[in-house]
Amino acid sequence: MAYQIPFLFFLLISMSAYSRTQPEMLFVTPENCKLIKGYSKHDIAGVAREFNVPAAKIRFIKTEWGRGQGDFEQCNMVFSTPKGNKSCKVFNIMKDGFIFGLAVPIPGNHAICN
Image 1: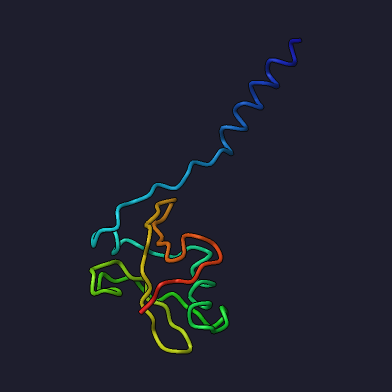
Image 2: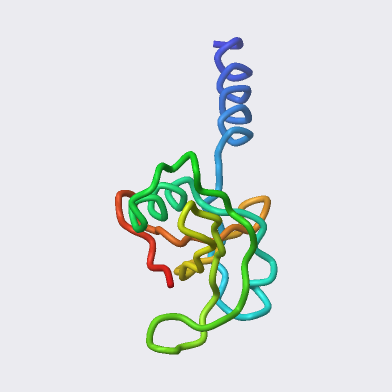
């Protein structure tokens, strides 16, 4: 019994050290748009699907506050593609050690780009 208590304490501490918190969602504002430093793992595939090009040919360039479809202001992620640079709508901005945008929040979908 004496060995069980230290082991359980060790197990509890170990589990809490490895637990991950969920990323924090930020509001999509011009200020937060400027903070984006990367993209989600589904964005490259979504941009490739949108323009029917290989994912290996897509590169993230930058973010910018601009206009989208319908002439509404929005945060855009700019990707280099074989068909030229394309601006794609940022749906969510997440903070998880660094700040990244989600142009394709649902895996398997297309990005919405101009």
